[in-house]
Image 1 (cartoon, one colour):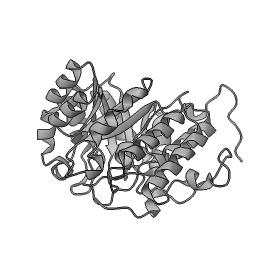
Image 2 (tube, rainbow, N blue to C red; image 1 turned 90 degrees about the horizontal axis):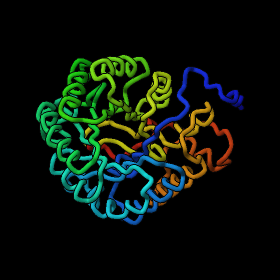
Image 3 (cartoon, rainbow, N blue to C red; image 1 turned 45 degrees about the horizontal axis):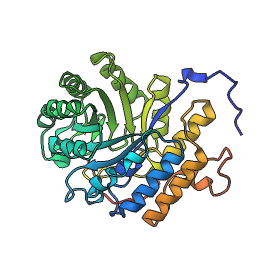
Image 4 (cartoon, rainbow, N blue to C red; image 1 turned 135 degrees about the vertical axis):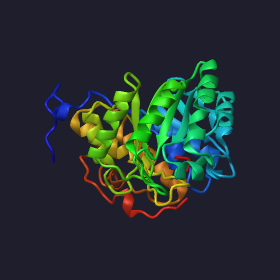
Length: 331
């Protein structure tokens, strides 16, 4: 067992707190067979009970393209019962933004892929065309008193085009902010980045848009997700996405695996003295609910070890890269 950090001391230059966003109800479920709205709300309830205060609840996208998100309005209609939680929704078009706002969502995430191949597969538009719509989306959101985040998908690699040129990502980020984005999120859509590549791109984007909050959305296809998240914390990134149980993937990015697992990141932070605001035991309960809803076990190592002792300093189990999932997202 590792030693507890000395009180008040955080090694490696780590922040005092992480601003964790749970994306399981959206990214985690979007490649799955649709589950009942009631099951989604049960999962959201468990996540809130576990301390999550930022939750990506759903996506307002084409029901024919992503059937699992067809009940977006129904999910959104229940979110008012948790007024202290920041609920967000992903959109891929101005029409999606309008639907989200009409449903009462005020934190909207708009996706722009930095790679044309993924953009065409994901939203049937070039990257330039998707980027040009940031202004309309952001303006609409701002008129409703909301906040617009632009998620830059395939920020490191594209399943169709290969490595994404960093200069192109920087250009997308700069232009998105110029067009009204309040914040950015760099997405490792297919889970191939590593700490050094992450740090290099993050530095370049920060230099291009100083003062703009930048978060990370990491997948764990090659098992480097947590290592990359740890490196990001050392660089002062506190806005990081994760998905309960390691669920997730992109329907339009062949080979994409699940997100980094919320409970694994929360466990790592807890053991390093970084506050996440969550209860590990509560996250394990949420993971069990997700497993029941989907009818299968999830890849999280902490979730597996939690069978033995939810509160112990548990070890790690199978990584998300070892689990077969449907190959089909919106980012």
